[in-house]
Length: 250
Image 1 (cartoon, helix red, strand yellow):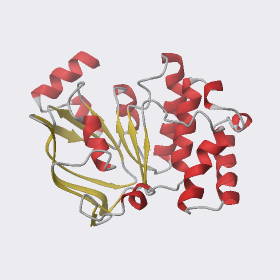
Image 2 (image 1 turned 45 degrees about the horizontal axis):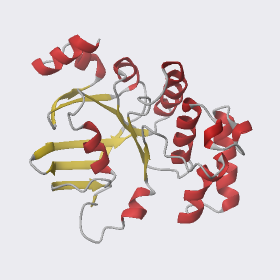
Image 3 (image 1 turned 90 degrees about the vertical axis):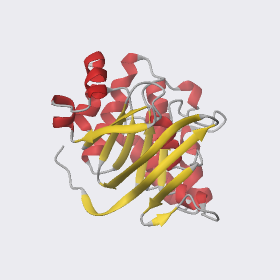
């Protein structure tokens, strides 16, 4: 994609990251850099460690070893102000995680107001602008159970955007949706990527990764086996495991 990527300093630098669950090494010595303006897509078979790696970046999983630096500061260190860090790194989950007892507007504005990122007036104004942008302003006073899956996921994305994050992490954001609802979520993500939002996306939507990513990483058994720009990555993969994987999914 034709977008500006700031390579002067990585927003994330990951060094030799390991995450173990008992004898299972879900993330196995992964090192990577993520730059402002990148849309980095992570693909691979189920159980390859993609989502665990992503959850480590937001400290939803505590790494076993290695280090994660965010804007130059190590975040997986004792006394890290985790909540303050998470205000800068949004996350969109498979299952929306909206509060069922709150209206759509309340779901979107509760975090920026509670954390002091915005006043209520500022948060409502931004929420309304974003809801109008995605065509869901009429649903601002509805409750999550009154929305379709695709609508809920777009609201979950808006909820992250209203915090003005440096990065948004997407953990298989379309995997829980009916097929006819996938397109509306992917369309919004494509728009955001084109505007330069820094995104790290775990997905099984290989065609979408090919179209939108600035860089693609392939994980298997906890390791990154290959990465690169979409053209070479998909058209002439060098790793035999990646070639086998792509032959099954393309």
